Image (cartoon, rainbow, N blue to C red; front, side):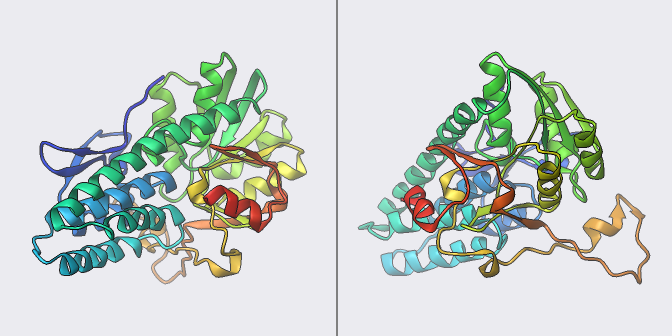
Length: 345
């Protein structure tokens, strides 16, 4: 099974390299990022996206900020790196992993004795986070594979594959692991309007790996559930509180339909996605630009005077979730705050 990395540090150029996901599936282009401004733009534009990948990108971002900082005084150096880290943090307010990756590296370099050691510590920690993310995805895949029947068709929404992580994937990692274990799994990938992460990215990954995938309109999912052609729904997550799962907008709709048709609804996510201290009311759901919905290429598809609401995420209540698959095992709702805290520790 393909284990292609999504983003990595290139020591030869001292740059963060990543696959530009906005160009897929037509073009496979590697970007070399050497500045915080460019990385912030990449995250805002969704060149880098997916909760675990954002955590890794945040960690590498701190390493990048430390690498380009020329200040000699350690206190000033750390202050400048902190400022650059905050520039990255605000690019995607709903996904919790970005701030988690940033904070983990900042906490490490706060104990550095010199600017040079801070640079080295930052990069070492970022590399550790990237390796841990890959191992985490394989663990999620192993636990999740046991939940799938030996022969099944899975519906997934958005992209929770290797492109959304350092490699392997969360939801798609479960599918990959199940196939590696000898199970016959086919996939329905919702196209995921308006940016088509399902049709552009999920389908691209699965075709590359030789996994049977069929792309459907988001609104066709309930029809297929009613026809009994879907055995499970499997999605990723951008933030999990004790009361809801935040994921790509449209996820809630699939969860409601899955419950009505008595189909298991699984969420695959690492413990870094859990936010034990907050509830749904405390989290800002990101709203993205009007143009993402009103234009397809150069063509306008919405009247200029019509209003547009472009929510990037929605919240699925925990009572609609059959199970949450983590690298430490499977959680079954209801989930209390103590359970989330123990996962984060």
